[in-house]
Image 1 (spheres, rainbow, N blue to C red):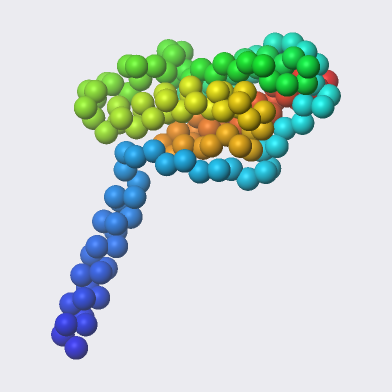
Image 2: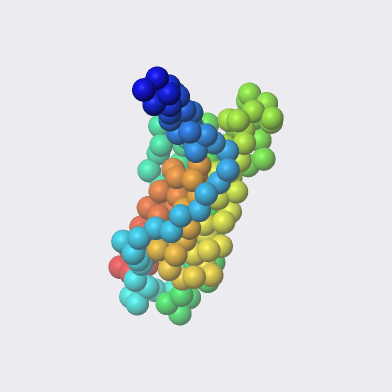
Length: 154
């Protein structure tokens, strides 16, 4: 009985620790559902630039989408902090480049480059992989892509 009680208490103590370790620095990729499908059948050739909604803590993003012959021929995506600075090599470095904050911020910087490349390659927003640690950037990418395609289809 005493061993069982000890095992239960030990498990209860470890449970919160196991939850915290799952949230740390490694980036994980997940596929998003088909709700992120885009329809290019009515899209007109052109270059469409769309700004995302502002995240009150992390800033905004801007997408420039080039459509030619009902296909996305190019996509450029940039993230901006609250001061209007591009999220780049120094993003998140206020606490030092060895800090956990910097490493997490750099996951978002990397994702900002990956998302548009995947979109051009797959031609399918639902096949753009979300990267954990960059979920706000992913949300802004989805938002701006949908709005750019809507704009192109008017």
